[in-house]
Every structure is written in structure tokens, then in C-alpha cells.
Figure 1 (spheres, rainbow, N blue to C red):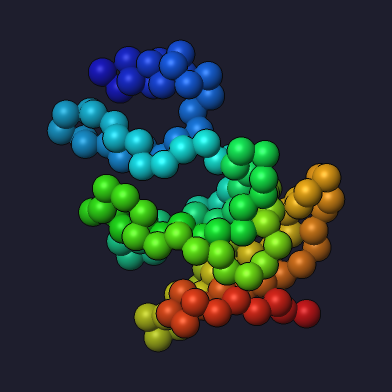
Figure 2 (figure 1 turned 120 degrees about the vertical axis):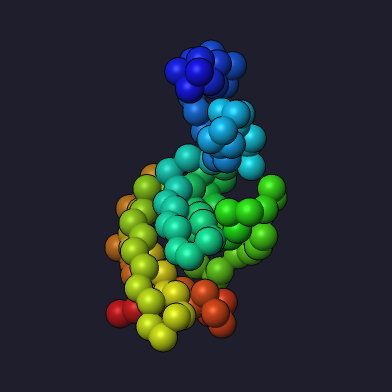
Length: 130
């Protein structure tokens, strides 16, 4: 059954570029949002954090936060750094506060980035680290 869903996604979409939420008991996928690639994602507790990527020819500077029980995005906002794709992300927690590090990637005209940012998920502040 899962192979049939995978095959259907490939043939209808060309390339799978959607986030799917699967109901394991029925194997029915539900698309949460789509048409973004080159992004990074992390999961902490019950939230999925998705940042950057290319969408409709533009580089995103938005972070999307999806709670695993929700059908839609919980938060979607710009965090104040240049849009990018093909970057790296890592996370740490200090006293139950999640911090996300974002490094490098590519921006418009495929320019390589060599910057380093820290995003505080509690205060929603983002600062560039030197």
C-alpha cells in the first residue's frame, strides 16, 4: 500500500516536493503545504521547524512551525535573515528553550553564503554570530 502511494505521488507531481502527514493505520497521506525545496527541517518536542528553501523562484526567509497534531501551519513568519536554500541547521536546548543555528547556503543568483545565525524560538529573535 505504501509503495502505491509513493508511486502515485511521483507520477502526479513529478518530484515529491510536499510535506505529507501519514495516517499509519489507513496509509492515507495529507499534504500540509508544498512547492518548496532546498529547505532544512528539524523536529523538537511536537513541533516541526522548516526554514528557507526556494519557492516559486524566490528564496524564502520564513520559518514555518507545524505542530504534529495540527492540519495546518501553526506559525509562518520571516526571521530577519536573507532568504536562502541548501543551508545547514542544527538545534540545542537550554532550560527547555530551543535555539536553532542556521549556517550558509545559497541566495539569489546562486551566491554562496558564509554567515551564521542563531534563532531563539521562545523570543522569536534572530541574531547574526561573528
